Image (cartoon, rainbow, N blue to C red; front, side):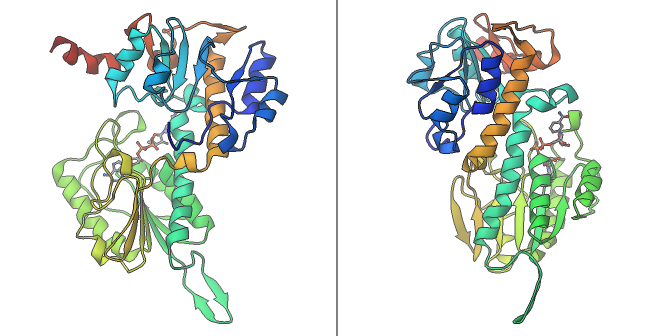
Length: 367
Ligand code: NAD
């Protein structure tokens, strides 16, 4: 995919697979932008080729392009971020090609699957990078400094949404020396926020945003209105706002309205990690950095790709953990009674087998 700098297998994982008696082929230059050179893969025992689509199993970061789909053959295995719930028709296409497709964004969030959780590993990168982008734009220091030119007050950062990305943003802003405040509609995260040295903003919304499986649920209209009202003050009082609020399968909630932005101090920075799903700030422009009312709003997408070395290393380890589940002595044994595989395998034997995706396709089929 244009602009994607990550690679799905790093030499470390390639070597592990080779040691387990698999043959590993790597597309020429696949890891170069992530600082993994072809020579490192060759040293790890992999072969560099121009086309990997002969392989029995193809591992990617982003989903295959239309051209690549044309190269897929029946019985082949494919692992990538396939986003089947966002685009179920794409899953249908893969099923029609007879491919067994596993989606890295469908790994269930159960304890056993944590080492495979690519959404979390990549969210860690995004949360970290969000703060660095803010620091680079902010016309102020982050830390408090005592200098011969007088004392500099520390920057104030506010993080909305304390999931994996939000917690990493809090930790990074703290390490840089900012005074950090955070908010989440799931009150259970309060302790995690405090353990990172940040203040948890206590606001009574009259309901909890705790949904099932540790995820957030959408707030009622009334609670959302209350939240926006209460966040207005915190947004105004901070120099940096990082927003990560998301509800699985929904458009991101708008939490910073266009009326709040002019109240922020000139030079303040908003980093909207929810830009791709609609944005938490009403003025965010997807994929762009814009200045509105003297406030910089960063809507850059795919932040993990901007730190491709470690993002790839973590993704590759996630993949290795998933492969360990079903790759036995060079043979793939996919057992759909396994909890993890049941959620992750999207297509098999020419059909869409994953329940949630199949459900989305069902009304389309009957129509
Ligand atoms: P996410 O990316 O889906 O959402 C980010 C955060 O936004 C969440 O914490 C959510 O509560 C919050 N949010 C949603 N609506 C909001 C609103 N209106 N205002 C403020 N905040 C709002 O979240 P995530 O990073 O996927 O994490 C969700 C939870 O899942 C976390 O508790 C995480 O620790 C847990 N988790 C568990 C596992 C596992 O058990 N294997 C793996 C990963 C994450």
